[in-house]
Length: 498
Image (tube, rainbow, N blue to C red; front, side, top):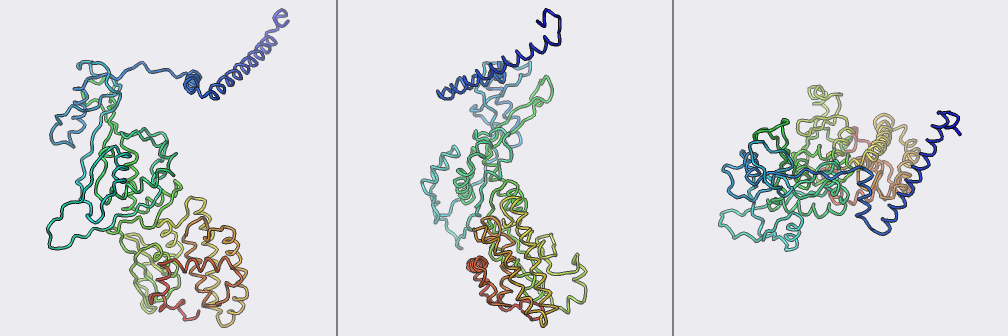
């Protein structure tokens, strides 16, 4: 009717409606077709359909070039690593790049990349007292593509006993730390980041075991030291070898080990990276030979340093103390070097910090005591601020109102403690946030110790807080520290009241 009457607008509307209905019917038919193929487990036809939908076409270009060409490029890229050209022709080939006009073209080779072995690392003999199990060598051969028969070295004559330090502990889920993106290409081991990230929970523990043994034995898999080089033309029509730019692909598993070792040298960068990826960090991740002691400058009291000393002790860290007398502090020389004219002063290498809570946060970041993700870190900050509120009220009572306000403070203490009681009762893990200890837990534990001296029965009405205090006191390193003279002989507060 619209066509006969010449109403083009109506005709367009009718045709568009019919087209829309037909497209909808076609999509529904195609959906049923795909579902049927999936139910029949006919994955080949499913993928063919997906390729048809996306318009994917098989590349008609082939990888061309001869073996001499591959050797020429390989020797060119290894001219700084190898003192003499290799005589072996067991090389992989050139990728799909147009060869220069002057070079002959031969049938297509295996579609791989040029592999460049990295300079080998001189192995260190394993400790004879620590033989490698057969199962481990099989695992190494399976996962790394190498096979090696391990044997204890023959004893060497020496006048002094040889001592081997234990390997550093990589007690960390390594794969989330490494697989920062899913779009990176696979290396020579053909393990792509997407696979490693998806299987992080399953592969984290065995790779951690292999990494520790690799560090102990001084051995790295040859496959992990191999790079796949892809020559990329620098200009549209390359005519010589120098016209190609090498793009290297290395093993993502090896990248994980390299970044973990770098993190042991620079623990701050590793802690930040782990927090951003949501993985866990163990406190023993610092190489013993590079673990420089911290320096704490403070008065001869527990005061604001109690929490950080408990934390350092529990994390297995050492520190050096510089004890300042009140008379020396009043001279003003040291006070002038502190940003806010306050102690404690904390030194970590060339980093100097004041403000006790900033120091606790710094230690929390460095030693995995700042939560497993940003959400937990924010909650830990909140709980630590709550502890700080309680500490300020305690300090005011001790230094300003001890004689007149002690009884009133003890009466009102239950209101303050009830907030922490509710948080601990709700979390169920025994800690304030998450399922592992944080710097806020150490801070709360320290202030609870002070209050248990002030009022020994203050926790009787709070079972969760009482259990928390008992749990923290029972941690082996903390227990030994609290029983030591270094803790017992120090007064809690500077005015002797407690």
